[in-house]
Length: 263
Image 1 (cartoon, helix red, strand yellow):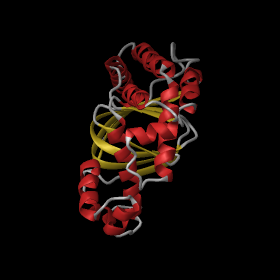
Image 2 (cartoon, one colour):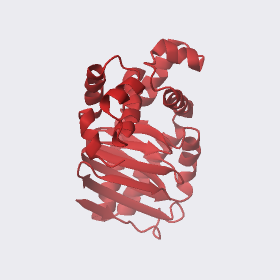
Image 3 (cartoon, helix red, strand yellow):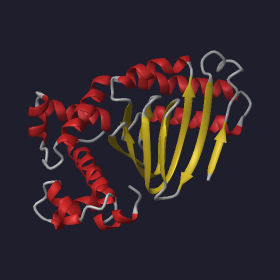
Image 4 (spheres, one colour):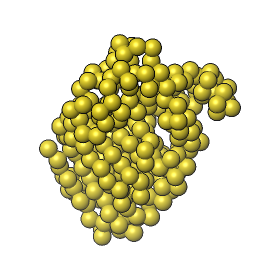
């Protein structure tokens, strides 16, 4: 199910601010996969469900309540793992420039597990106004987008750099358990600083994010046909049982189920 709104960018105040605005409310079944090179900025809110997202090879998970922003020009792959209710806007135009500058410093995208509530309210307002075309819709949309774009553009991009750097470390050695102390040592930061920056960006400590990154790596190996015991060994687990338990807790399915999913 998909509802789409295309508010007019030839009317004020959208005129001159955007060259395109698309407002979408969509329910996507589990196991759907999408792949594209983005031509616009996208800001997505997950109302319910879950999807694994890869941005130029950088793995993330879109969970219920999370907000995701991504810049044009990146390769975006979305794999829906649980029926996914997502509300989003696709944007192009001068108002996007500050956000794009911020996202460039954050590896092309930012995922916020616990975004500020006013941002979610504003995004929902923009989507609803765009779809219904209510009286004064363009003004409601402009005000709502100004709040979301301004908040995202002004957010601390240094933490986005941190996530990108942590992702590169994990991808290079997914077999390591990556304790906070080991991670902090590799980043030349204090463990407390790593904990604080992760919470500021994701709303959670690094442990779950690190495990999700490692399990996303494992899922790709399994989808390509690697046996479970071999994947467990590749990821540094003592035995397949511990690996299977961690994988199911993180990905919501048994490792053996991945063989039925497209690579």
